[in-house]
Amino acid sequence: MVKKLKKHLFPIAKFFFDKYSRKERKYTYEDITVDISAEIFPPHFTISTKILLDYIKPLHLTDKTFLELGCGSGIISLFAASKGANVTASDINQIAIDTLKEAAVKNEILLNVVYSDLFKNLSDQQFDYIIINPPYYPKAPQNDKERAWFCGEDFEYFKKLFSQLPKHIAPNTWMILSEDCEIEHIKQLAAKNGLSFELILEKSVLKEKNYIFSLQKS
Ligand SMILES: C[S@@+](CC[C@H](N)C(=O)[O-])C[C@H]1O[C@@H](n2cnc3c(N)ncnc32)[C@H](O)[C@@H]1O
Image (cartoon, rainbow, N blue to C red; front, side, top):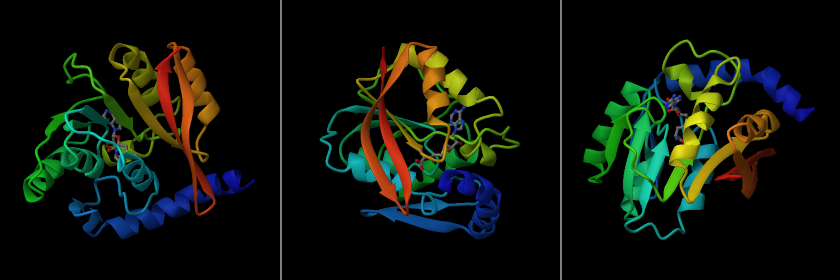
């Protein structure tokens, strides 16, 4: 019931998101600050980014290889790099890529920032960690900004991701999803590519349940 209501409310919420995010904002985690323009996924408005940041916080990441696939503002990538990880941050949104490169300089943090449609421009490098906070609303994105939210009418983002992921899968391949999305359908798409989901964290914020899953080859 609550889930259905939220789905109906999404267009209204998005209207306010868009209005709020027209102004450039800053988002800070620990002592790292990034600029969030209207073109970039707003971590201050959603809870998924913060849940991932808190989950990563106690990890020993020194010298670990770490990929954030679809990095948006890159706050997760910058934080992982500040903890000693060897980070690659990728995104299909060129504005996010350029903004993250500037944020890396401002925060004096070294990381590798790559423009890429999923794994297309990433080499065959294997990673210790792959972190994914995917777009999950089933609608066709009309521009790069909307790619942060919409996965295609027929879940094309997930279909493509799961077809590529078996080749790149890391010991820790984590995806965050909300109860607000069609988790069972997404799991089925993964299963078609021989991937299974294991729940590693469940967290409720403002009555919305969020889950971090570990993806593995089944
Ligand atoms: C929900 S946002 C998450 C951003 C960031 N990881 C975070 O947690 O704040 C999803 C991100 O995936 C990116 N994205 C969408 N489709 C993509 C694709 N095919 N290849 C790479 N990145 C993509 C979007 O541009 C957006 O930055």
